[in-house]
Image (cartoon, rainbow, N blue to C red; front, top):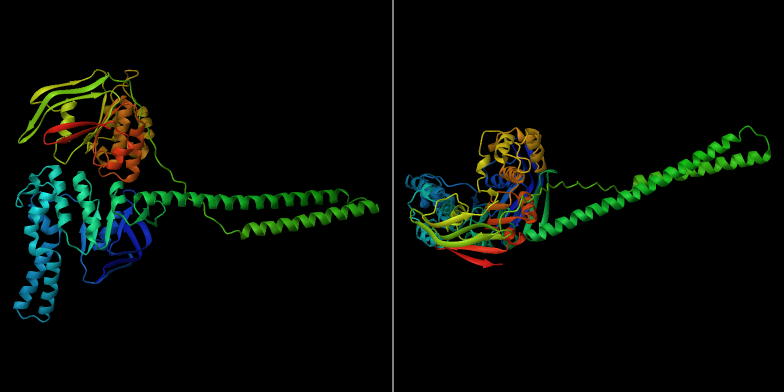
Length: 556
């Protein structure tokens, strides 16, 4: 039987704050509906409301057939104490299905009324979720994603890349009728993202996915729902991410054209009415000047002026009514988009950094021997699977990680700007202004320490105003932390950017802000990213692919 998730006139709030209202949506078999919008617009809140974690404020949520299963796969870190098997059973719904089946079995053993029906329903759900063979499927799926881990191993002992793969395993093992996915490709390497894409496309049932991965949305989405936080409204578009952007931009252009046409017609009529009233007033003034004369000629002219003034007044009134009868077109909201820039500081030497027969060993992991030269002005994309050693390579190249053997050197006049995955510099209770002021150091142009007022001005250029600068740094969102670090880079006059997964957990607006700034930066750029769209748009000149402890260099 076909499965359909239907939302009717649904309002969603977060606490006392309304996010959007009046959402009508039907997601049927074969539909992959992408939910997009800035962080805080209500994407995750919507998914949590559908699955029942949050109450329905207004509207209805219907599932057909009623016994269809909904899989809610949120973007959460695994419990460090759980084993891979326990985690997979919980995330796929098998744990709760086990408990219900046991309870139904006990009820049937006790002879409780209706126990047979309850057991039949519980068994059907248990089987539908794939509980019968989950343990057998787990090693195969783990191997597909490159996770070589004992199913009983605590997840807290896994690396970050392995933990991301554990989350992917839970997704690929899922056998829900309806899937709700929240940022399913975050922290995944390209192979993992491709597996998620394949899984979603092949699922067959209704899928509702919140994601900022533009390439992923282009590959899987059949339609897009945009949550507009500012106007608290919902818009629907057909197709993937690129289709949505093109149609949204076209809709906005048409909206402005319609408003401008209406405004021009209205203003023209208003101007005509004003001119007619002015002519009428002049006629009355002329008639008034002739009021004291008695000649027949003057009386005739006076009456002629009065009649003409009355006609102009009548025409002005008719034109004013015509202006009022125009179908009003609301002025579209002017979209304000933050755009910041990053200027290269004084150029570095021709050679920025080198590795010569470098080897790094960590426990059982070994990278090298590696020999690389990073030249000034190059834009290098560092690629490879999770856990392959990309971050280790950067740490070795720029001298923050000791080598087991070999040599590393940094060129003269190199000023680094490192954007790490956690934005750790801002993980502080100190105010944003104090952290940025300390990180900027002395002004490279004057050698003087930055004044607090100048730091505030610098932060304002990156969209961080008075409401941000006095806050504890750790209270900033990841997008705000990114802009604060870019302000640090601008203040320090960096000439080499090192970006390690810079778009993870950013919303699309923040990704595009960062993308525009880095694209215009004229210095050296080294980028680690699984975001295919970002790599393409930044016009990288080289690729360093890390695999099996070695680095393959390609010219793009």
